Image (cartoon, rainbow, N blue to C red; front, side):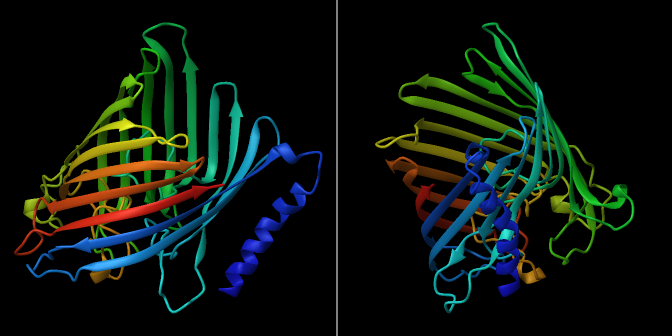
Length: 375
């Protein structure tokens, strides 16, 4: 842990020195946030028909980031966070771990370039494709690679802007040629219409040589070719009422893959529908949102998606990462803004497995209360 602390100090120290130069304070920006969470799980059934013990946890997360605008067209960024290094989907830590030192890891480390309508970054950064939830890709998973975007603005009532997002990202390097890496590529169009009240974002994602189980427990590699059709509509601005829909279709053919059980070979479709009222922008704001999810086994890469909805993971295969596909369920979220950059959110989840892996379908209920504060 001492080595990690010294490394973080060494990397953050140049940002501190830059900040002491009064001539460039506007070029350097810091951000931080903290979350405290109370979480309860109950009635969670395993695949053998037995129940997991009900569980109550007190958890927290802290993040610190910095960006430096070196020129008008180039900037550098980084962010560190709490969290176990082997749990990419979960930066939260649980209170009561015998007062051990808090593990810290780099979440982002990148260079960003912009010129007129074109922008790209290289390194480790946020998922660069438009999304409205974490059911396909977790906000806590930061891909490594190169992202390229181009945005075009239009002056007409029907179409306000059109953006193209693309990139190549390496999940695990082979040490030989790039074609033998575990990687994914994506291309997406994002169009805004009718005074930016309607947004469409179709995409295609190709995942190559992905392990079936993360963190070295894999038994075979698999490819995904996923079409995504997404849309978001602002129906009313005050109070703000929005609806959204996502559809996923994996067009890979697994019928001749003997490594995949027969009952899972055609489990390749997913859809998510959500509706919300309100917003959480300033003090006194409130919001309520409902989200329904149906995500078959190969409609997404399960260990790159969120792990919020259920207690399902790959611990029996030596991995702490979650396996959150092959389920359907409902989320109800209610939030209230206490002050600028400070809010409370309560989230209730109920889930059920689509295809059982054993004699019974896994299921579960979970409720969370989050206190969020940003700086």
